[in-house]
Length: 605
Image (cartoon, rainbow, N blue to C red):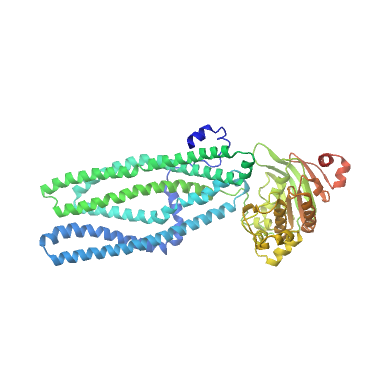
């Protein structure tokens, strides 16, 4: 059904996931060593206990076949000494109890080790992503980033919880068994192990193909999560245009791709286990044939042959697990490539090592011959030069794409200018500490983001160390206290992500309270009143006078009635400044601003 839906839908190519492609690198152990560096903090605590427990249980497994084959069959049973037999049985039971205790301790500590490593890795990746520049997020969907932080790191869990110790245990077991087999009978050991080079050759041929398949699984999961995230965010638009059926068909297509990638990867990975079992069958056949000849020739005793057979049964077990482990390593490799791709991503906006500490500022902003382009095709700003004096209210108007928001982004240093410089109080923004700069700037957007949590927590986001009284005072100043008091739990009312229980005006008032609480020297209002009704706008205009008083403010607005009292109004068009001045001056010029006001007046008439 999903495949049919995928074929029928005419819009399956509406999204292009160019931001998430295969990272085609050869399997290299240097990357795995890099991954293992996350184990280093626990190398002196959790890891030694797990290793000791593993060595105890492994030693028991190696001792028991010798006791059964060499001693029980070779000496005890022929001597018919019951006491010796009882002692041997009791000894074997004690050894298995010791092995049981070792396995319990091993499992406990490797799981604790794995969870700690996963926690550290996810924390580091999230912290790193938080510091990346806006260009990084411009190129990637939220779902793609979530997949890296959640799914890709989760896929490493098996490696860290069991893989490391199991790999070590199987290697120790395999090397020990090979040594014992060579000691018992070199001719028989060499005859049985002749198939190992063949196994290695075939598995080498398969590994690149399998690794690529698991990487494709990660990509398809990323696409699936991206679409899910987009669908949930835009569910109201989907329902408004009655596009549920088409959206479901598209999801079925993406889901089918994800299913097919898993099916392909698991089918290829499944070839390992039967291949090892087939090798086991050939090894057993060789053991019986060559062993029988050696017993007949008197080269090998029956007791030695039985011991040898017991170890051969154990010999294929670690090889089989190593085959499975290799599949896990391939999965981990494809996941780690994607994780390290993010960790190796450098911010476009970097802070200098000797960055200047920005203390109290007045808010004097200067653009000096600034050019900027989001890509190579089109410039967003063309040699812009302007000055915003401390405490001045500056409005920017112009058609969509004229460069208003770009100027605001450069002041916040979300991007760096392609040419020229942006200065605050005489300091080039590239020379000052990022945190110092952004702590002194507050931004209020048209689409206010409300976090999951209480009203109190959302306002306090502007200054986490603020007291309850300061939060409430900020809400009162901007006029938000009135509607907050009407809520069921007042300031402790829980709001879900994006604050859907609140109106657009109420969300905007919360954003004003948040900005006021931060007490910035510079405040940017980016279409902050665009989604607000006339009655609420009157309240907000009163709040703005208090909010903007004594602060340098940059107001981006299409609704020109909200900016007529600004000290300076800058009219932009396609990245150029056409004219600037206060409302009265620009109206007298009868230029572009005059035409904008005139057209809006006619629209509202």
